[in-house]
Length: 256
Length: 286
Ligand SMILES: Nc1ncnc2c1ncn2[C@@H]1O[C@H](COP(=O)(O)OP(=O)(O)OP(=O)(O)O)[C@@H](O)[C@H]1O
Ligand SMILES: [Mg+2]
Image 1 (cartoon, rainbow over the protein chains, first blue to last red):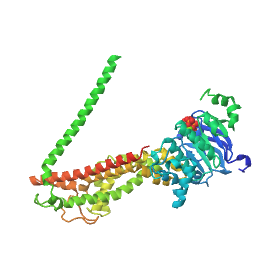
Image 2: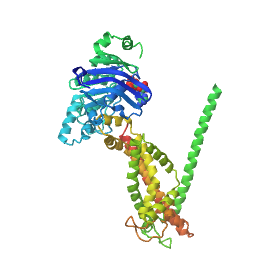
Image 3: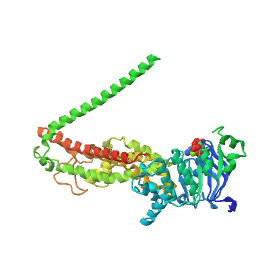
Image 4: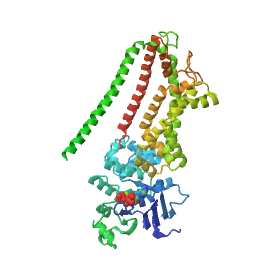
């Protein structure tokens, strides 16, 4: 396939996913531009997580998983045989629904992605820790306890640590699967602020069930229903004058 | 309606008291046994008992040789069985999932854990003692016991690894870690509490085992201290067995004293296992 400029940072073409006989993602086409925030919305079970996890190949370990179609990042097919999945994941980071820090110190959590690349230089690691934690606005809260367990942090702090750990590897895309849904409103608001800031440097895709959140943080919104991409467009447009009736019904809470 | 409620309540209570009775019965039997042993054997536990060689005279005999033999066996068995068992457990749990060969092995391993220990002795007699020509050495004994506890270590390794939440693995993969890096840096450290517990319990099982060693011929009257893995040996349970089969009262006393020592060793190892488990549980809350 030839790269053309409309494809953007990430481009999905005729993507289908099957778990055994179940057809989960149906013929999805989607292009995402660099340095934007895209929200995936849709009722539970419609395939948002499945689609998101296609983008860093997290589904690879699932038995019976099968996909057809192409997913290109910067014009390259990420499912190509020549692609090393570890390299891909360094470029496409992921933040999960439930904060999942490693049962290690705060410092070790942040540097893990670098350590496994064989980086040992202490001053470099120190700098990455400070920079990453500052970017997620956690530095002031934890700078005196970097060598204490990350599990002692609050849920919101843990989630920001997980984001810091992800950006420490310098990905270009960050995938977030309901990153604030397990958090209290204040922590959740902090994550939203953070997303708006991270947009400067990263391309962000976020799955959310919270319509207000989607409209606050995202530039584009994709509405999925039963595995199909029903509507995709500018967030303003989707939330004010959606083209499809299904979208209208969903965002006004008539089902879901 | 009310009637039914009362019946259920009665059943509930009845089961509770039945459970308590069973527990108490077990405890009572155990304490009678322990008290008996302590009364008979405690007086015999002195320095001479620990430092003497076997002897025809009960008051001159001691457990030096068999205590050292048991310690040797403990370390050699651990050295052989732990790396093998942990590696197999990791393989089966992390790599072998979709593999027909692995599921075949898996079934066999769970079956092996239930095979009577004397069967292992027979197998070892043929393979280690005769075919490999290791004789009745410490090495042959340790290999035998390794066979015996290998399934236990494999199963407990798998349990410990399974208990590590998927979210930790996913976090590691998502940062670009390979499968092996994820196992080495995340799964094994997080599983180490359960892993150590399993290993210690398996080794304490090996220390108390006598039947397979008797089969390979370790029932010896030995008067030299074992200094290398190729030396002949005796172990505590065999010495106890030996003394118990003598008619003189003095030997019975020796046997009970040796039982106290053996019990102490196993209790200490179990205690260590419990301590390690609690420590890790406290450190790691998911
Ligand atoms: N490992 C799996 N094997 C088989 N089916 C699966 C698997 N994982 C998910 N599914 C199915 O795929 C469909 C889509 O699931 P997915 O998790 O992507 O939904 P979702 O949109 O993220 O839902 P939610 O909003 O509840 O997180 C569901 O019907 C689910 O049952
Ligand atoms: Mg989901």
